[in-house]
Length: 501
Figure 1 (cartoon, helix red, strand yellow):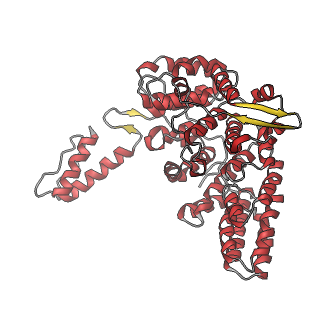
Figure 2 (cartoon, rainbow, N blue to C red; figure 1 turned 135 degrees about the vertical axis):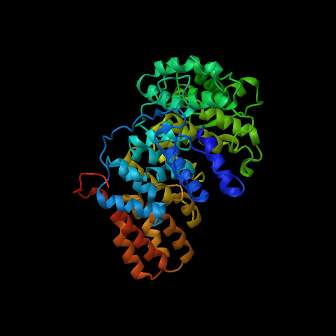
Figure 3 (cartoon, one colour; figure 1 turned 90 degrees about the horizontal axis):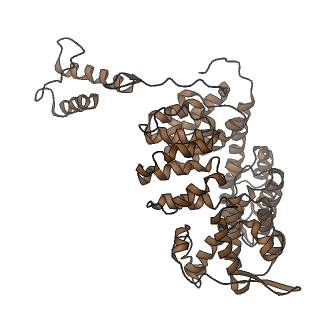
């Protein structure tokens, strides 16, 4: 095999040609030359062979890359990507990739290897790379296991594998992803052919593709997967079933939740009464409620410990639509009710996570407006994403106004993604103007957050603030906003070149 021949050459290079002869390449004649020079020539030949589109020893050609249907970014934007990858304000790369995808462009093919490597190292970057990279990126991911993550992210997955049983894990994940998007029933039948013989690692990877095209038709298969011997498989199955509000799993969770939360009091003074789960039994374990859920050792909840965390897990997996019948209240009224025994945080966090899992905008709006979860900075951020776009900025500005002090405001802003525009931009700049003269530390922290998220249209307003309050953070913020303005404008410029550079 070529790998063995390559290793022989490496050994000779390490010990020297005087101590060990140069390996022969029988099919190649390079002539009688200095041994060291011949070793280097042969190594170069082997390196090219290893990188070529042929599988060593088989002469089996790799399928050609698919043609692209999406146009490449304009010429100026191609140069900008090179600067970003070279380190010029590299933190703005996610925004650039998002803008490329929104405008219906793709990145130049020559930058794909470096982008795919960036995605391998940074999970948050992966969906952005997948959206902006085009079809050739998925083709490259099929050739390199290090880039296989793209196959579950990309909407432009290359043609996967013809032989399901013999394909690599990456190829098979690609096959299931494509099938789940087009024919979920056929994808499930394909997986069932080999399910019992797959490794636990592979079963978990394959089951994760069921997020595409998930429906009640998958329930029977997912219920069986709750008894799988693989922990990750069981967890994935439980998460998928929790997204099916009509499933038996959802009914089990609703029964648990309704037994723990009751509406009590008179019509004029109603409240929610909470009973914590008494124990973690086998049925809870089977349904994916971990014995030690995340946050079960939160010092602020030390009095309740894991039992309160079990409550949050149960609520997060209960269909929100069942609360109207159980409580006789709409989301706004339910969220506004007092909760006995200081369990409001646990109840509202459980509902918050359920809203995120189920994509319930009305519950998200109710939870945001009551303000009970402002101290959980990441929760409001995620809930905002469920609201219609014009509404997000207004609700975010209201959250910011409700923040108690500058540190609280900074913590909340740290979880609010850009662009900050409209009322939210006004809410950010107003305290910035007031604080610039006497709170340099607050200004510096706020500028570090704003330079990637504040709308570039605010550049002139920030320059005016910098002139009124000479402070380097404000000047640097204005410069970064101007850079982002140019960066985004380049994507809207006409491109006079017909072919990709």
